[in-house]
Amino acid sequence: MIGAPDARRTMDQETIHCEQLTESGQLRHLLKLEGLGAPIILDLLNRAQSYIRPAGQRPARDNCLHGRTVANLFFEASTRTRASFELAAKRMSADVLNLDVNTSSRIKGESILDTIYTLQAMQADIFVVRDASAGIPELIATKVEPHISVLNAGESDVSHPTQGLLDLLTIRQHKSTFDDLIVTIIGDIAHSRVARSLTEGLRILGNSDVRLVAPPGLEPNPAYYPRTHVTNEIDSAIEGADVLVTLRIQRERIKEKSSLMTNHEYLKQYGLTEKRLALARPDVIVMHPGPMNRDVEIAGSVADGPRSVITQQVTNGLAVRMAILAAVSASRIES
Ligand code: CP
Image (cartoon, rainbow, N blue to C red; front, top):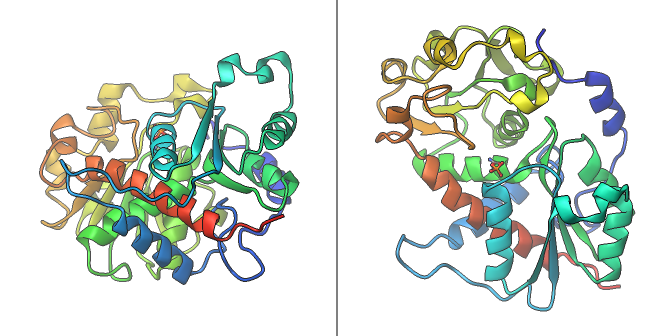
């Protein structure tokens, strides 16, 4: 196995448990999609859809976060998630704090919880957290004051729930139902929080035909992917697919990089090329969470082609993050 995730670390972290919902069933924290019911997910998708505006129009605004403070804590690189959370919070009239990890006191040895308590003392209301270690968002959620919400913006190889929601929204905009769809996810599934959150969401919404295609050594732990079909055979898994999701190799999580294929070889063996795309249904949609490596996991012509919905995913990401901020703001417990 090349660089398979450390299952023991992940299992240990999963022993921390925090309820995502308030006693009345409203969303307080968003840590993972697992455990949320279909009604909550569909409500978030409906809210997000209401924030979508045609290109060229002024973006949607909502002042439901007026007087609230959103703190973005990204301890791992991000373009899309970080920028969209910042814009989402500003478009909802929040005060926004973007902590720069490279100039924060974490590099002087301050623990993440002490950073959280410091910002809590400055009356931050919502923490948006990305971290390379499993369990961090859930740990923070167990420690903050009752009126505070924690949103997982990407957690190791475990969870990326806002990405899962934006992927579901994108699929729903093109397909009439989730249950009969063939969804094929191709790439480094072993290290992908995106694949895990999307399959969790699809399962909750009734889909049972997810095909996971991974190169040898990058197959997932089956315990995290119930009722999916895992294979190394890309062409047969693309045949008849309604949705194709391409993923990059998560090099930052793989120690033995020497065992990885060259970019050229990867494109040949596992890349989504025009020839492979032709095996899918004619109305297939092509997705990629980004960041994208053109002509490695996906041919540039496919990424830019008529079946691609990759930029629409980005637009939906902003709307989904607005919807989540609105939902947790509505469930706030006043202390
Ligand atoms: N898809 C995604 O999480 O992208 P970023 O790493 O740029 O936020």
